[in-house]
Length: 362
Image (cartoon, rainbow, N blue to C red; front, side, top):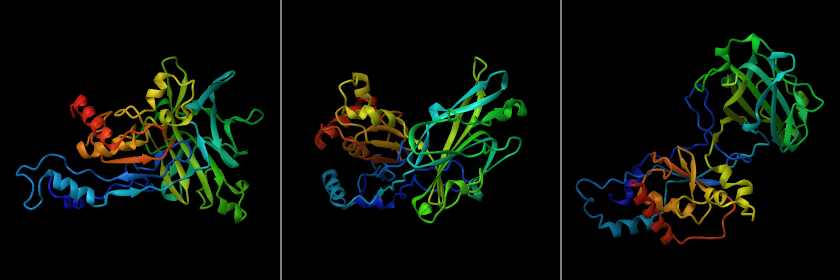
């Protein structure tokens, strides 16, 4: 493997919570977590090439045992601490729906559920452009945005309000092709929902939600989440919204959310280990290697949350492939969560990893 200093020659780890840069392809934001969106954790850097050297180890590097002792003696310089981003609002993607208006089949009402830990303003836009270079300003062409609707803080809030006006899209104004721009499109987006709150500093400075103009450029004293969706027609002829991406505006910076696969099973009510938990649900939250500890480590860039921290530490020494999809691993993200009281030793983790690798024939 060469001597341990070769690790310093590897590229520095790619930071996945970098701010969104206008004009770049596929910006990476903080890992998606229900609330907060990114948890305290660590990024493990790019892994070394684990193929054995063609001509053996360099002179003076010693045997494998000596090399491993040298590596363990040195601090791992490829660990990077992530930061926590707490956003006050979150639209639940699975709840976004379009309901036909009675007597007017070409008109559709927007329905969704969201959580807010502070009072917020809800605005809906149709066939909208988002200008990332102008503080995420949103503009529309044919239908004006809905007036901002004020909500108090709460969980499971419903839009529209029972006694409030609905947000209606008139599909007769647009051709069917424009309703499904596709994942790579930069707009216009058929459906955009923005949830906005005032930061603590903004409140201290006297700012209020009533100051906000629908679609105006984002203020430095605002925290928000913007959901961008397309509309397609399913096999039964119904109009169905499909979320293309979600972005948050925090501290005057825009981030695109990246969802972690398996986070829902590893967190929430399934992580409380209740008596009502089924055997299948219990297995979904366990590390796929040791089947003892809870999952708390995500593989990047494939974003599979499938291992516990102990097994992940051992896996990175033996292979560079995800145990789920077998794609190349660039780094690992450790997310601090409620832990299963059961713990395996480092030796047991190493044995479990070796067995898993043999099973997968990686």
